[in-house]
Length: 143
Image (cartoon, rainbow, N blue to C red; front, top):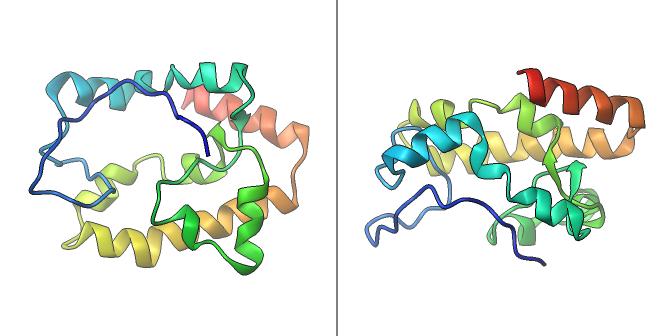
C-alpha cells in the first residue's frame, strides 16, 4: 500500500458513496473535468514512479473494495508494480463516458468493467515485454 498522488478533481459528497466515477458525476469540479480529460491530474504520479511505488506501465492501482477482492490467479496483479498507464487503462480510456451511459454505473463496473480489466491486466503480466511497454507509453502519449 502507498499514497497515490493526484491533483484533486472532485469535491466530497455525503450523498454519493460509490468509488467509480461516471462522466456526469456531480462531484467533478469544472476545472477537474478539464484536468481529467487531459490527464493532467495524473502528473503527480511521476513522483510515485520516481520513489519506486509505481512504474510507467502496469495495472492501475485499485481502491479498497476492488484490490482486496483479488484472489486465485488474479492475485498475481498485486505482485507487480502498478503503473500510470497500461493496457486496461487504454482499453477503457473512455470509461467515465461508458459508465455514464449505464443505469447503474457501480453495478456495471463491478460486473463488466472490472472483471475485464483484471483479464486484460493478467494477459499483460503473463506476456510482458519491454517492446509492449514502449508501445503502451506511445499510445498513451499520442492517444
